[in-house]
Image (cartoon, one colour):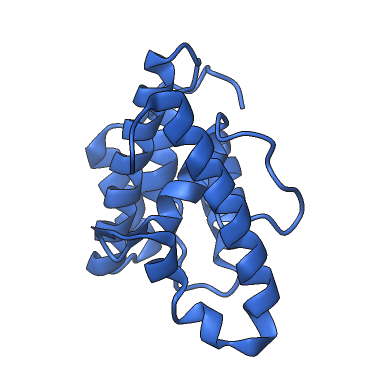
Length: 167
């Protein structure tokens, strides 16, 4: 991701929610993920990293913009690209997890949004165990979920070691 992204005003984000028909409870989740993502990026930047805080915040704000659609990550990417938000589309498309690649580090904007998303259930901060409790009961996806939890715990640990902050 490049650092050229300059952020969007809250009003513009609300217009995107309206255009997508995003329900109020998912908007609240997106806002909470955006705020946590921005917090995490700020904390890492204070330790010498160079993350685009606005891209993390806004990526969190719109990561589930098409949540009610089948394949919501891909649908969000299409929706955001059509509106001219290419960098936000890239974050939204990758926020779900690690089907293709395991990230090497927490220090990428999409990875921060992905981790923040997993630490927010509805609009409340939760542990990874709480977030995945119901998903682990589903046998067909249990192995993938356990893999994702392992990766997320590693990323969370990396964040905590770098920042000295517990999430």
